[in-house]
Image (cartoon, rainbow, N blue to C red):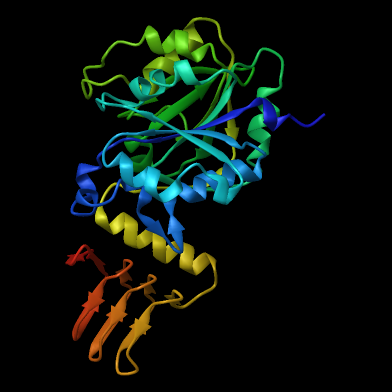
Amino acid sequence: MPPDSSTLQGVILAAGKGTRIQPFSDHYPKPLLPVYDRPLLLWQVEAMRELGITDILIVIGHLGHRVVQALGDGSQWDVRIRYVEQEHTLGIAHAVGQLEPYVDKPFLLFLGDIFFETRDLSSMLAAFEREDVDAVLAVKVEEDHEAMRRNFSVEVDERGFVDNVVEKPRHPRTKLKGCGLYLFDLAIFDAVRATPRTALRDEYELTHTIQIFVQSGHGVVPAEVVERDLNLSKPPDLLDLNLFVMGQKGEAEHIAEGAKVSPEATVEGSLIMAGAVIQAGAHLEECLVLPGEVVGPGRYHRTIFASGQEVACL
């Protein structure tokens, strides 16, 4: 029998400030940055809806009112969205802890600053239905050693259950990389409350919570459902993600409806968002122009136009 997604809630963490992606984070909550034709956050909402999960909680913080303005109550996308505020950004486990009064069933959790390209995401739900399974971690086989060191490694025992997770491992002992997508039973809140601040970043790390959960006897399994996980950390990440999605759509350029491009301008391999204006004499190559921006004459390569600024991404 397929898993019943109506017994699950959805959670998206969207509270972080994203200081490394400035200047965009001065005006946008990072999960609201545009990816192709809609905010990153909406890609995640739609992924949950496709699984049949329609009750969604979003944890907000930095510029949280912008998230509420953008998504409202979710009815436009046939879901119900509610918001929980994280007043102090003290780590992912701390953000999860803010949810306890509002969550009354197992929940699928997305980190709101990661774009996920997945395959058979419903298999996470199926894995959760197995006997003795209390959590599922989305993983991918990662050949890039540096990518492993930027994330967390997932080690499994002979039964296929997780027995160790390591945040930003210097010497990974596995190629299974955790990807910021999780399915948890409510018992995870016991482990959250037992999680101390770590020396690594003086925050409450979710990987530490998961390790406590495992050591407490709860069954945690990995699910290889992630093809790509593209994290929005720095400005070039936003450009590269948009170029990637445009390529996946089979487009050489993407000019949104409502954008105005002068016949005397050239746009090559670039994305022009709704309301943007590209004036005569502008030559854009592999650029991203956010909604409402105006680009004047000149040659631009790998540049993002946002909030009246030109951000080079070389």
